Amino acid sequence: MDRFAGEGPYDYAFINRTCRPLDYRKVGNGFREAVRRSGVRADGRLSLHSLRHGYASLLMAREWRNPGGGTAGVRAYGAKSAAG
Image (cartoon, rainbow, N blue to C red):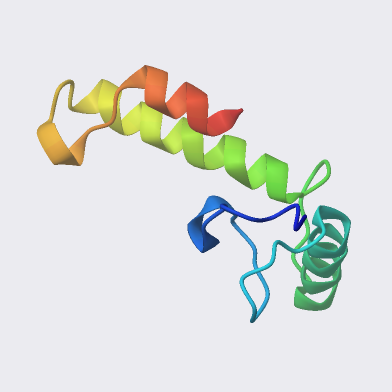
């Protein structure tokens, strides 16, 4: 039985050309190599996970500036969920 049977192509953040999920280690390695080549420097370690938390923080800040702002806002719970 195919272990991906019944899973849609939008269930994963990173997929290949045949809609199979990419191995998270390979994605992370590719990201780190792209950061290294870009010359971006920052305190601490830049990772996909840190970008996820940064994005969630931006969503929460937007909601605090515009509470209940309809489509422009996002509920803090949703941003917390996005942060993992």
